[in-house]
Length: 206
Picture 1 (cartoon, helix red, strand yellow):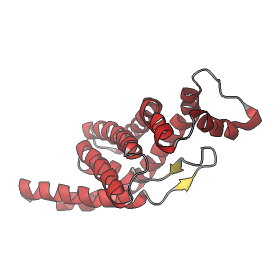
Picture 2 (cartoon, one colour):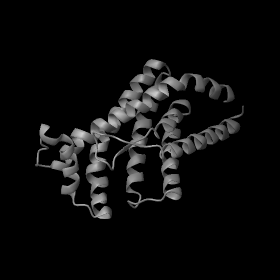
Picture 3 (spheres, one colour):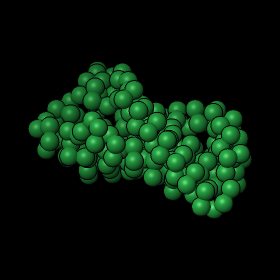
Picture 4 (cartoon, one colour):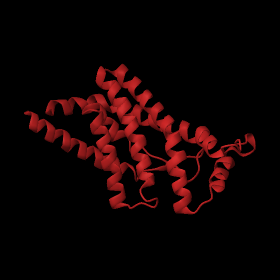
C-alpha cells in the first residue's frame, strides 16, 4: 500500500469510527447516583480505538466529527456547549491514552494509557463544567444554579451535606469527576478487550 493509499484508508476508517461513535451517543442510560440530566454512554470507545490504531490525532478527529454530526442530525439545546464539553473531554482522553500507547505499543502501555487518559478526563471535567457547561445550562435552561445543586444534594440525602461554600465545585468534585473517570475506564476496558483482534485486521490492510 502506497503512502497515499494509507492516508485514504486512515481517513476512511476514522470516518467509519466517527459514525459508530455518533450512533453510540443515542444509546445512553441514566445513572442512579447522578442527576437525571447526566447520562452514561460509550461513545468515546470508537475514538479511543482510532487513537490506538491510527494515532492520537485521529482519535481527536473522531471525537470532533462525532459531535458535529450530533449537532447536525439531532440539534443542540445548549448552543453547542454540551457537544463542546463532550469533545474536549473525549479529546483529552484520546490524546493522553494515545500518546502513552504510541511510545511503546503493548498491552501494558495500553492499560497505563487508558488509566491516565481516564484520570486526565476526570480532572479536566472540573474546570470545563465549572466555567463553561453549568453557567451555560443556567443561561439556556433558565434553571437556577441552586436547583441543580439541590439535585446533587438529594442524591446524598441525609447521609451527607454538600459544603455550601463553592457548592458547585464541591458537587463536581464529589459526583462528576469520579463519574467521568469511571466512564473512561469502562470505555478503556472494552477497547482493550476488542482492540487486539480488530487491530490485526486493520494492520493487514495498511
